[in-house]
Length: 138
Image (cartoon, rainbow, N blue to C red; front, side, top):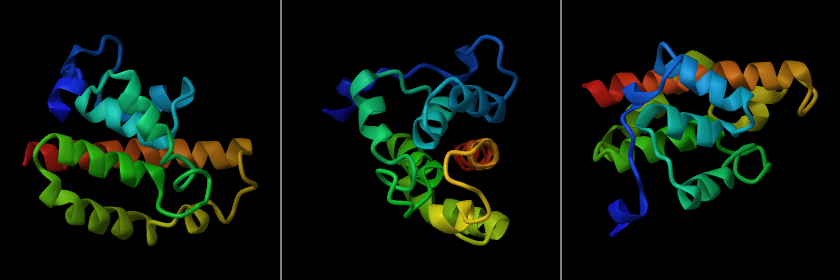
């Protein structure tokens, strides 16, 4: 049933982007939040309802600064690709690289929504998309 709600496009069908990392960064810069950008970049979800649902996870779940939205988007991508059991591996890789999965901890050095904060979020979004791509290829 869920598969009928989602229109998948092959990530390789994207035009100018050279990698999943680049796609995620461009999607984030174009106005998608971290969750949406990771989800769209990694598996090509192109469904308004799915993107609306993913929007709620940005900013650490509704701007509550809890779980990083990039991680949430990655878990969604893995689950929708039939590789949800790799979600723990994503969290482990993310923690190894960033020391935390909490949006508040990841954003602590920055004023919320400042240029520096958004640059950090873009970096995290790009790196998480690359992690998900790696896990999807295994």
